[in-house]
Amino acid sequence: MPGLITMDDLSNEEILSILDDAERLLPVAKGDHYLPLLQGKILGNLFFEPSTRTRMSFETAMKRLGGDVVNLGDVKTSSVVKGETLFDTIQMVDGYTDIIAMRHPRQGAAQYAQDAARVPILNGGDGAGHHPTQTMLDLFTIRQAHGRLEGLKVILAGDLRYGRTVHSLSHALTRFGCELIFASPELLKMPRDIVTDLNAHGANITETEDLLSTIDTADVVYMTRIQKERFADEDEYTKVAGAYKLHASNLDGCKESMIIMHPLPRVDEIHPSVDATRHARYFEQAFNGVVARMSLLCRLLNVEVPASIGGEA
Ligand code: CP
Image (tube, rainbow, N blue to C red):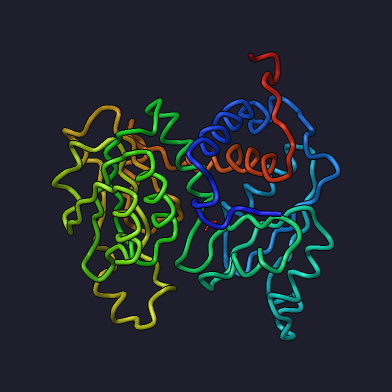
């Protein structure tokens, strides 16, 4: 059964329909209403790389919907350390579960797992490749704030080279006709093959090293962490570490409706002074991971989300 490996696996109509379902599931995600749509279903959480939000929000989503979760847990205590291959691990978990959420350090690992599996694979991040479930919660957050996805001006800033969240998000935003500004140090520019693909989808892209010069015209500023763990050479990391540090004082003159997002974790690219501003959305964004993943789990398990939940039409 097909899962979600890249945003190419979803049409724009499917994206909007999943976001609509997610909106109706909000009272369930908040624990205000119990709706065991996934009772009897088991999610396998296979995280070969560290995660807080993706792993825990998948687990919360499944449990809020009455389903259950089995975890690979710490890779060091699994049979991976005995040399078990990803192919063999997937063969096992495929038999134990109805759906798998997987994060892996190797780009392409999610597709490899899907090719080996009978159950759907939800790509929770494959190296510097893609992170489509993050994109679904990002789109949910943007639509909640602006009431639409179409035609927005979005700055994507920081590590665009290794940042799988911005690889997936830029693809989706282009398909909804957004104007994109890529702000990064030269060393961390968006990979050329991704820019070529975006252009083939009719992208409107400006690339710059200057984050602040266009911030007053933006509807969304999407900050990302410069990912030390992806650099082969620590000296290269040192050259770009701390390249962008957004402070509340940088936000004077921005649109009132502009939102600041971040997939988290942050290091120093968003100063805590931003947290109390009207623009900060990153903690709400992280919560939205539960509702977006609830909706995705229902969709991939062919479970219909009711048109009315908790008495709300
Ligand atoms: N946004 C995100 O992927 O966070 P985690 O690495 O904590 O899962």
